[in-house]
Amino acid sequence: MRRFPSKLLNWYAENKRTLPWRGHRSPYAVWVSEIMLQQTRVETVIPYFKKWMKTFPTVYTLARASEQDVLNAWEGLGYYSRARNFHKAAKIVVEDHEGKLPRDMTELQKLPGIGRYTAGALASIVFGMDEPALDGNLKRVYARLFDVEAPVNSTEGERLLWEIARENLPTGKAADFNQALMDLGATICLPKNPRCEVCPLAKECKAKARNVQGLRPVKTMKRAMPRYTYAAAAIIKRINGSPCALLVQRPLKGLLGGMWEFPNARVAGDPAEALAPALETAYRLTVRKKRGVQNPLAIVKHAYSHFSVVVHAFLCESALKKTNAALKWIRLKDLEKYPMGKIDRTIARRIINDSRF
Image 1 (spheres, rainbow, N blue to C red):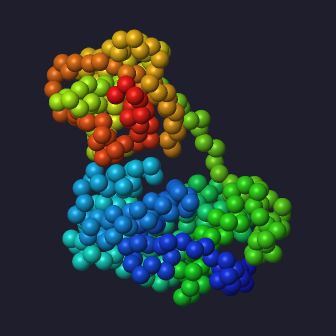
Image 2 (image 1 turned 135 degrees about the vertical axis):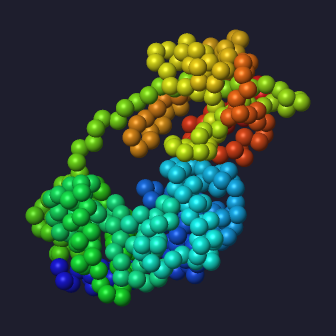
Image 3 (image 1 turned 30 degrees about the horizontal axis):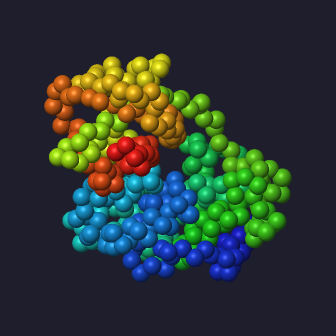
């Protein structure tokens, strides 16, 4: 196994992917990419990265931006706490570190949204420090190379993999080494059907030698994902001649924090029948389905990390019984300016494209 770092680096020199953040002169650009790449595929990140760098080209422009502008730029990438934490971290870097990422692992991990992996990636790629990195791709590569039988999502498996990563890090070459592992995991050591026949480390791979590469990495079984039903009200009325929709802003903390959505509630039974009493309880909002409309405007399904939902959205008429500061009338032509999750953006675009409005 002593030869595997040099073989990997030789392969990387000839096969490394061309990515917009690689070789970028700005440490901030690398930081942007590492936050976006958390739990998100490279192909998805590339257009968002390019747009982000035009919108917020420096850590100073990001720190000065409003949270709504930040969430708007992030919309569609999911895991919105990443955007909110990145925004907070940018302010800290500007206020406490003169706009520069700290060159210290402990200080890096104090920044919101930067854990052990991201700190290692930034320290090695940005500053050339001899620090290992360990994300999902790298865990899979190491688990196969060293035939790790401990579940990679267990405390013991995590500890063992970090030890392996540290012990095999070539001195002075951590940046290329960590990125080479990322590329190997993304292009050859795939989750399913790994391309062992073209892998530069096939002869060093213990899992392949034992013909168990398809069984690595080992993961503990996840519990069945619960599924919930929600009913939502698409309430449209004209205000000063302009068609408007009633939206509610989610709490700043928690899932989709600070995003905007149509008034909704989790329901049991028939969503059409449960909608009115559920929204009365949730918002003191009296609603009824729009006259002459029977079918839902949209039925949208979406899976989050630990549960999935199906949302039934109905065209409704309503009256507020009591002022609710979270509710706001938004002109339809302005809906794109308000950050939304995928479900509510789908509903919003369905309304915008409806000839009745």
